[in-house]
Length: 383
Ligand SMILES: [Zn+2]
Image 1: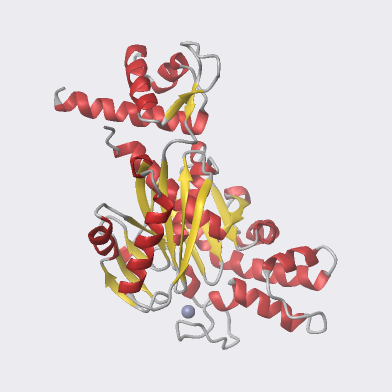
Image 2: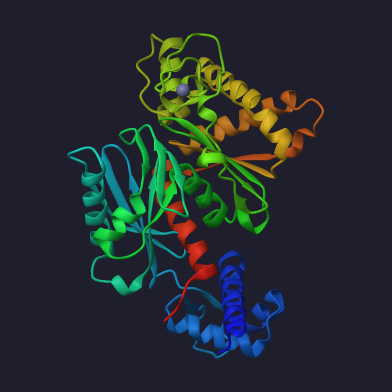
């Protein structure tokens, strides 16, 4: 096949897979109309995808004109997450299901132990089905240069600087491993498996966990910024109470609006109640205890003030709030939306719709898988 024809077929295949992901199941003639691809081409690409285990006939009848859907069972991405204490991993299937979850504690710190643990988890997640693996991906906290597979800087991961993690893993596993930032992974979970991509191309994701960070999509593309530093809003000044940040400075936004900061605030405000240890606990109590709601509201007001200039500058269609507890995230998202109205003085207050996504741990793995799937759909080679 001439080169241009191969490129066109690969583009058409990508369009078909994306249409099936965001709008499927679809019949061959619906695919032809929606993707603007001739029906004979649709037929031949569909056969290729059926053979590759990426697509299946959606109805059991075996009719030749049965609608097609992505196959959620046969193929998967191996997604991993590296934290300072452990490596977690799971298979991410084409419908976003997480299976074969495995974790392994890190007994030593540093690159060598991390790579050995990540490789071991990857092998266990793969199991006896190496041929079913579409890609392998590892999410880390910190600034990541994705094309080079380099961790540019990560304070939590042993103060890493310019660590070629992708290459180190490739040497051990014998195949490419994509390295992604964990906050970006969480954004991809919402964009891809939350189907936000189907109707939005501009999105801001706010992740509230041990720290605070954000990730941005503009015109459907991730914004990485100078030195992969885009999204590090956790370390802008956000108060004057001399709160010490783990970065060594004072009064970073993280010291007011990360999960530990919010829980410390709860404990301080409601000392008689108990020590607050999880945001799920706070979400439960918010209904009954007005002071809990007041803490959530203060955090939301501070976040709204910090987010307002970003929203005014970029006008994303959607803001997703990710949080260790989704119900807490939903309450917070609702209150931020409320306060944004009074911050965006000259801008339409409906500039962005706020909503919350699922628990962070699952979102990181699933989103890392989503990032790889999106890339595989675009450039994947089928054999
Ligand atoms: Zn800081």
